[in-house]
Length: 124
Image (cartoon, rainbow, N blue to C red; front, side, top):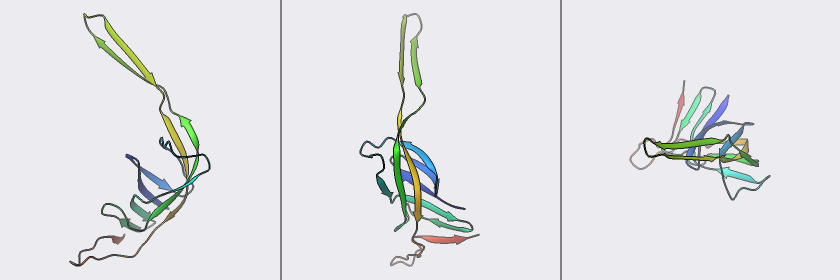
């Protein structure tokens, strides 16, 4: 099974081809739009593992925006004893729903001038 860990916005997600995700709201995303995310931290393909430091150069995740969805209601209350002070605030966060179409990778091992491995392919 091929999967990847990708950073979208402030969060990291474990994705596989064909997965549908609810990610943090992206205001510029339109329904049906295709996006590419290049902040890929890890790609695993059966027994092969490719790690980035911090990101894998040349790796991309193709996403298709399916629309927006509202999350569950969150209620926050504050209370101060003996002061008759109570406050309740609620919200429903908005998420962007995406479909992972393709995980493309660059499996070439790159070595810098000091002969240190920058990206490494590990086999189990």
